[in-house]
Image (cartoon, rainbow, N blue to C red; front, side, top):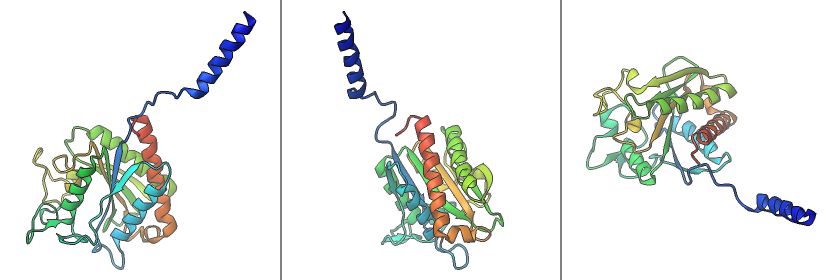
Length: 244
C-alpha cells in the first residue's frame, strides 16, 4: 500500500508538470495601432513623428502581441496622407481625383487585419494644457468597455509623466466636426465610428499638447515612457477581459 501511494504521488507530481493548463484567453487577438499621420500641427513639430515613436515603443514592449500599425504617411496615391483631421469629411470620406484619403486607407488596412482592439494615438493642439485625453464613440454598442479601456490607458500615461488626466470624452463633444455618424446623426471621429472601423474596441487618445507638452513629446525618453505605459495598461486590460 505504501509503495502504491508513493507511485500515485509521483504520478500526480509528474502530471502537474507535464499537462498544460487549459488557456483562459482567446487566442490570436489582433491589436491595431494608428499613429497620427499629421505633419501640419504645431510649429516646428511633427505630430506624425511623435505619435509613431510612441506606437513603436508600445509595440516593442513585451509581451509581443499580434500587433500591427496602420499609417498613411508617405503612402502613394492618397490625398491628405500626411495632413488633415479625423473629424472632417474632406479629409476622411471624400474621394479626390479618384484617390482615397489617408484616413480611409488606414481604416481599410486595419479592417483587413480583423482587429479586436484599435488604438489611435494623436497629440492635442491649442488646448493650453499639459494633459492627456481619451475619446470614445458616442452611442456605440461597446461604449462602456471602450470607456474603461481609454480610462486605463490615459491613467497609465498620466501616472508616469506630468500629463494631467483629463478623463474620457465622447467624440461628439469636440464641436469641431463636420463628419457625422450615420447611426446617431451626431458629430463623430471617423476612425472610431463603428460604420467605418470593424474592431470591437476602439479608442482615440490625445497625448499631450504640442505647446505645453512639447519637451515631453519631442523627447526620446518621454516617447518611450508613454509607449511602455500604454502597452502595460493594454496588456493588463486584455488579461482581465480574457483577450490574448
